Image 1 (cartoon, rainbow, N blue to C red):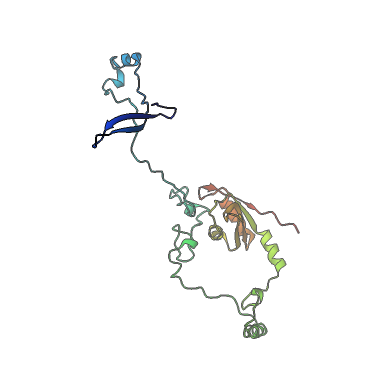
Image 2 (cartoon, one colour; image 1 turned 120 degrees about the vertical axis):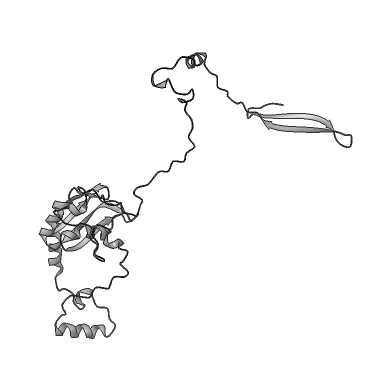
Amino acid sequence: IGPDSNGIKKVITYKLNGEGKTVKVTTTGRVRKIATTCLVKRALECRSWAKFGDAAEEDDGARRTLVSTEEIVLEKRSPLGSKTEESSTPGDSVVQLGKGVVLMVCRTCGKKGDHWTAKCPYKDLAPQPEGSTDRPGSSDATAITSVTSSNTYVPPSKRLGAERSTGTDMRRRNDDNAVRVENLSEDTCDADLKDLFGTFGPVLRAHVVKDYKTGLSRGYGFVNFVSREAAQRAINNLNGYDYDNLILSVQWSAPRAN
């Protein structure tokens, strides 16, 4: 019976079993049509022609297309969460940039051009830096000692060795010496930005603007220098610099509106 629209075909047969009774056997199967290639007579005639030129010494099956079973492995050069290696070409080396200024210098072990400070393999073995700030006067020290002895929270501005600069002066200094960095990669963090710009002068603050939903960089950030000369050197050397396979754009940051 069949086959039907789905290719199902039933075959019914009758036979005798071991007890001499007639039984009915129904076999169900699927019928498939296998397509066969039909060679065109004209194509067969062309194969019999005499070969000439570069194809004179080729075999009959040399020009046939076959399916390759070789496994092809694609290399991902820049995985998420890791930095690409800097080019070692003398013309593109960070050591040659900015008249001898070395951009990649580890502040933990002192190696140049090997790794960033945030990824130093010896950071756990480095000694803790000692405080170098001057102690406040006797009156301030007495006040701080009396407050801390009672296990009370002390604001950072009133702690031992804290600077006595006002917020207005700090804001004006940051706005005057701030630069804007654009075209950053998604995995760039604040430490990478501070390491990159810290070679041109003391950096007060380096901040990468991130998306609050994904936590990834939005492609730009800000760097605040202590001096305006250091900020100008950073702009001259890093504007148009190839960083993480992207071309940076470094300009003066627009001052904030009062």
